[in-house]
Image (cartoon, rainbow, N blue to C red; front, top):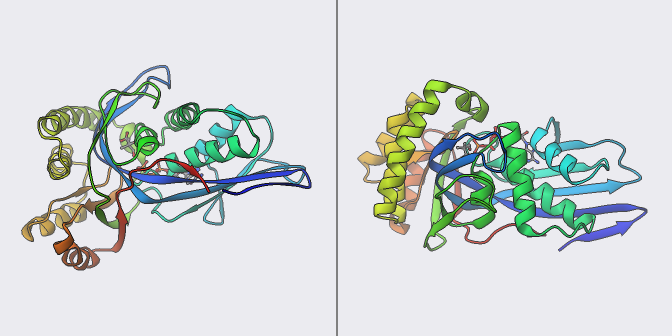
Length: 297
Ligand SMILES: Nc1ncnc2c1ncn2[C@@H]1O[C@H](COP(=O)(O)OP(=O)(O)OP(=O)(O)O)[C@@H](O)[C@H]1O
Ligand SMILES: CC(C)(CO)[C@@H](O)C(=O)[O-]
């Protein structure tokens, strides 16, 4: 834990994990607390470290991601809902950005938890999770990532909305390895704004959830996710090629929603083979499933 107060400077740091959605269904609502997605995803041990600083030396709110200034609208919304003070946010990510790993949700959660700590604001974890969810939904940067990230593990989101409202469950799991190959970015906003896409997503997401709940295991999660990927047509040719190449080697892989990336949960014996296979297509990232939640660091 790190907490400093000197020269009127208040600072704190928090870690929030990545979340890969395997399949989902969109539930629109006028109230951001009730808007969200249902579906299932994996929480990873990689994520975003966020430091917030406020005090006399901080005159305007600014967001830095991996050292570069970004517009950071989702993190700004978090700050505006918690304080009128200007805040400097510095997020360092060990996960890809804009590629289906829920970086915006992780940044929002980290900002909320760190600010609460720095300013001794006395929010509960659930209240902070809800603040992050509302910021995500208002900015169109995510729907269900925060609910997943707040809980950890292989998280099933059975009803939509902010973490205090959404009904969730978990598929019990070891901290298994998750291998990912990242091809590039896919804008969450552009997909969620396409009505035909939304129709396909919702039909395939409903079907996937039904099948998962009939057999709630990690391998069935991968099968349901892959079927969702096929049915929605969200994957580009390269993503499809990777999924098919993995299948030819007996491994189930699927698209990280919503990103231009592929993930798989290999068995111990085939992990290296999968990494070699993925490496032919792009940068490979290796994580483990993380069963804990947000922490001040
Ligand atoms: N504190 C922050 N940390 C990380 N990213 C942030 C932060 N604040 C804002 N962002 C922005 O969030 C955007 C990434 O969010 P986006 O929804 O596009 O993808 P993602 O969250 O990485 O993946 P997905 O939502 O598809 O799972 C980037 O433009 C990044 O600048
Ligand atoms: C919409 C989404 C796939 C974007 O990452 C995610 O937030 C989710 O599962 O709701």
